[in-house]
Length: 516
Image (cartoon, rainbow, N blue to C red; front, side, top):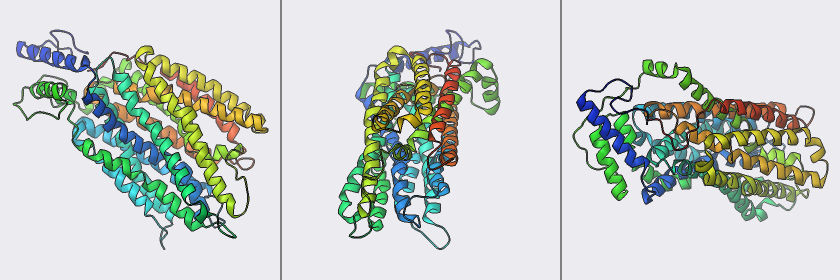
């Protein structure tokens, strides 16, 4: 806890009444910090986690859907133009950046509960609208998709700070890392689900896609709409639970400053796992109030500012590679020959779509998902900082090997298998490493009044990295020929992983600690 006995959160001496309230506050928060794992924690995990499942599905489904869009809407039925492909892929990270800053701030000002669920409504609406998009006289379908994917990104952005802060503020000290990791690990299942749905849809339309003379691109048009539209389903299921999740006691105490209500809520939640009790009379605690002046004063101190720099830049560096790979895995698979069509003519489109879909399933199962759960098992034992450092170090090595050895590896069948193995290892150590810890640490190291805002700033820095990676990949990949520059892009990723090592050194270890 930030305060000592006989002093307020701000460090000033307390009058007797305030001292008693502060003692009650610390005792109430100790109940949360030391609570046994219960069904309420399971509910929080699934309610928050389904949001990340939906987020990942919607973000990474476009990785496969863009290949389908190219077949349908490119005049030559080959692939989207560089700018069109960039537009549909980068629109979501741009919207996510906006949503993370906006909802992160609103959650600290208005409340976690009041904002939770609203962002999911945006995601559901925008996802459904994408599946119904079409060309028009004034705007192409690519333009329409860019708009809807930007709006969807705003909703996805809101999910990051809200889910992180809600799961961290309800968790006990001993299990907080595992609870937050379990929430974030739903992202891996979302990516896998997008790939599996693609496999199922493409297989279901096999006979329709393979025409007598030429491929049936109308059938491919059905495939991408179903693939994208299915992203609504988990969001709809989770919406009710999002809207009925209780307010966190830390917000009630430290932002609304109503210790009486917060104490009652803690007793009710821990006893029954139910939502909050009926409102009780206010009994206010003297605690710092969030304001622009207080924000500047707090982060104007180097000991606090360096933490914000550390969480923000670490997330930026990680997302350069995470989204640079994740949103372009189909391109990389094709570049090394894994996703190339095994036949020509009318069957070639089907073979290519199936190979790309299966390739993404392999990447998810072999690297992404195991990495999340390795973090889950060890994050409360090893700590956050050691896992993040280890991840950045190993990713630096892996990207150096893949980048400088790219041409040699893709030149033979055994080399391609080695490349896929290294690619899976990179996915593994992204998730058993900084992809998880950059989400967890900002949910623990900031005071309640700025926890969501600072998490939103850190997450938005990550999405800035995703935007930079996506724009850079699109503009650089074809220098010297089709996908000829991919190896050098991997070398650039290695450089950013190296810088992530140094930004991690700015961070404190937050295992079994919590800034009030």
